[in-house]
Amino acid sequence: MSGKHIAIIGAGPGGLTAAMILAKRGFRVSVFEAQDRVGGRNGAFQLGPYTFDIGPTFLMLKPILDEVFEEAGADCDEVMDMRELKPMYRLQFEEDYIEPTHDIEKMKDEIARVFPGHEEAYATFFEREKKRFDALYPCLQKSYHTWRSFLSPHLIKAVPHLAIGKSLYDIMVKTFGEEKLALSFTFQAKYLGMSPWECPGLFAIIPYIEHAFGIYHPIGGLSRISDTMADTARANGAEIHLSSPVKQILVRDGAACGVELENGEQIESDEVIINADFAYAASTLFAPGVLKKYSPANLEKKKFSCSTFMLYMGLDKQYDLPHHTVFFAKDYRKNVDDIFHLREPDSDLSVYVRNASITDPTLAPEGHSAVYVLVPMPNLRAGIDWKEKKTAFRETVLDIMEARGGMENLREHIVEEKVMTPADWRDELNVYAGATFNLAHSWDQMIHLRPRNKFEEVDNCYLTGGGTHPGSGLPTIYESGRIAANLISRKYGVEFTSTNRLA
Image (tube, rainbow, N blue to C red; front, top):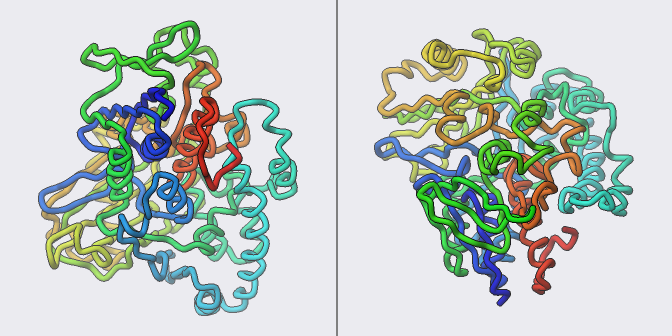
């Protein structure tokens, strides 16, 4: 037992990963969460008898989740009911669709069905991206809190696979030679809140991860992962304090030494882990003058991801749609350019619909469904007046779902509903600029140039979540929590066994 006290701000997936691992290793762990539930953007809420995930709905790279639970002393498949989705999703274009699958031969057959003559390119994609993944993923598991980190043999070996100067779209259109098929392997840039035409080519590993490892749904929703992490952390001895917002991080002689809650209570700790939205935390949780590099003025100069417009609808019927469907805008390039160049999109929108009730009977009453709708939007820097535009965008989205999703008379079947705009992300969940996917993943905001897991501005302070390395997305957020836990464990000489031996 180390006896050292670790205070964690935020019970999102990164903070909960660190909490359950550190508690297992004998640290005294206290988690302070502003909401009355765990999960943050990976939490859930109820509308009457309907259950909705707030944010993430795709679980990729399940082996990372398996590993962090194992390091916390639990078996992921024993504590949750995981279902692999086959097919993974439907990608709906104007007149046709493709349903990608984890099965290589079936995927080649699916490409041949929709894009005959291009199926052999899939083998090229898979072989090349496996090499890229094998080279790059060890780099994503390592902390880059010192400049010497760049001398890592893993990073040096990965350089030829970085695709410097190429975008994700560049790589896939060259691979497949067909526009819509290329888009089927580039829409994943949205997971990072980026445009495929601007997303660095190294992120070609994301579609590979889907096709190599599959996509899963835990019964109960993806928020079930956060709930189970919290249960595991508590079983290991961690304390999780809900409805306990942190007012300020206490800093003494340049080092974090605890937290002050909104109610005035001060809790001392040996280390502080920040799992709140990074830019929100940097701009509000430190006393004026403490931060220089990430001062409020400098944060305004940073690049941020897009935002999302959300509809959560409890319906008194089930529609014949797959678990996941992406409806591409008719002019997809224009829609993407509008979003990422901070222009208000027109009525030709891209819409993602999760119809999870066809897989998961726990989310809605029998015969009903809990439908989750996400529409990429510019973040709040676009200056859109969401009080004025909210209703019009809702109507446009419902029209698209009825016309393109075959959801006839949709409005007549809405029993419960919540609309969430980019402004609501900021106001309800403290998401800076409403940028749902955090800091952008541009070359100048990655690895050592991203806020570091061992925070460079304050000693005894660590970062987890999408705003730090390795970046947005559940698997990388879990990894950020494990990196922080390993750095702290090594600092205090606590022996541990970890699949990630790099951080």
